[in-house]
Length: 118
Image (cartoon, rainbow, N blue to C red):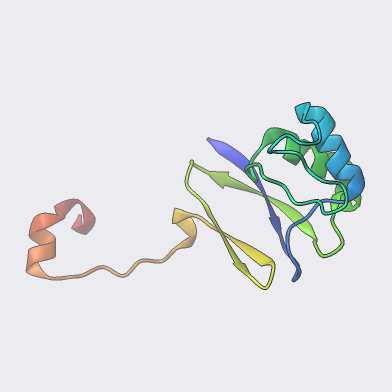
């Protein structure tokens, strides 16, 4: 399963432009006052970053979808697990495949988790 995920790849924070906010509200039939309403003045979203309508808006508008302090990139991940890490608004996408794990290499670990030591 491949899924597209939108993240902010610039310092400042994820946000949509007024045009992108309005387009997303229209696509999702969200009205002002609804909990998921995207205020065009702020561009903050309360929907998952993998939302198909969000991805469509960003792909359709390109750079015109970016909010004042954002530069949005879309990445494709394999599988259902991901995490967005953020530092000063700059986001990174973390998946199980992007992590390197150390293994406790003891006789007890070999006995309890033999599948890890094949």
